[in-house]
Image (cartoon, rainbow, N blue to C red):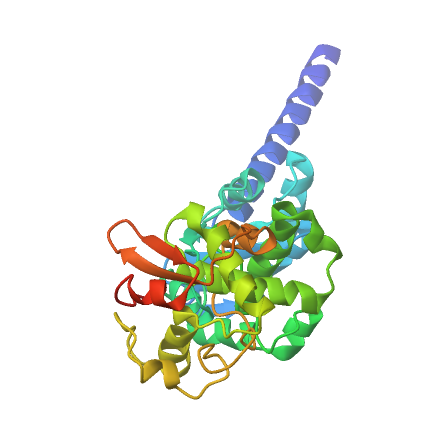
Amino acid sequence: MKLRRIISIIAFLLGTVLLFTLLALAAVIRFNSAPVAEPGADEEQDGIRIESNLAFLEVRKGESAQSVGLRLERAGLIRNRYFWYALCRFEKDFLKSGYYQLEIPASQMAIHRILVTGRQILRRVTIPEGFTLQKTARVFEDAGICQADDFLNVAQDQNTASRYRIPFATMEGYLFPDTYLFPPEYPAVKVVETLVNTFFSRIGEIDSRARDMDPNELGSMVIMASIVEREYRIDEEASLMAGVFFNRLGIGMALQSCATVEYVITEIQGRPHPEVLSTRDTEIRDPYNTYIRPGLPPGPICSPGATSLKAAFEPAPSDYLYFRLVEPSSGRHYFSRTFDDHIRAGLLYVK
């Protein structure tokens, strides 16, 4: 009799444990599964954008797992945020900040696995040396990172430029040309900040003197580098060209840079890039035309790369005052001391 009672109690306990195990398993299966009703197409809520069967989610730097779970629940991507909290505590792996693409519907465990492994969706974008703001903006729009107009609005905002102590009306020249990785549909302000932060990081590496320069002094160097960037073709000629321009400044001679005229034509007037500059082109009335205006132009004319920046900081000493493209195929220039020698070198070309 006593044995039967013990067996009954054990059976009851095992049955109870099994029942609770089954109930727990059922709860896990239910809460882990994707919501029955799929989120609507082309919607955005709490920073989560949904397009058909894809969801784009940014896990912000320093954001808690609870915050992410709440946003996922509100967007209709998970059934229950409390199960998400339990899952995050049980797994113990931290969510990694970044921008993610999720195929939906998806289970909570599948979403959690993606966010803790950091498998982000990023697109590679290369900004060539010598690109202007407008050309850079089009690159980001073509790559699906941000709209060109949004990019330009940020890059041409004086308040933003002042925050970085840029002494010009725009950030032209301060968006470092390089290869970057960005998520699609990224805020334009963050894109611009990344490029300008890269500039200030790299400029100190290129020449340590840049770290101690006041904004106006550094600005002058960036202007010079931007002109050199649009003029040189061969790396070894960059510092020699910078020396020529500094020689001209030193004697009060106009810089007479074809690149500044080309900037006026293409970026200010919106006309096609000229293959050859005419006398009429060099007479265009504009502050950026260094044929008719002495000294440096009002601002940079492009984003200079490391070679031209280094050339501006370390111009090659010489007594040259002129240079002219003489080998278009190789990009080699002829440097001269007198105007007569310069005229004999041939036709004018622009980069």
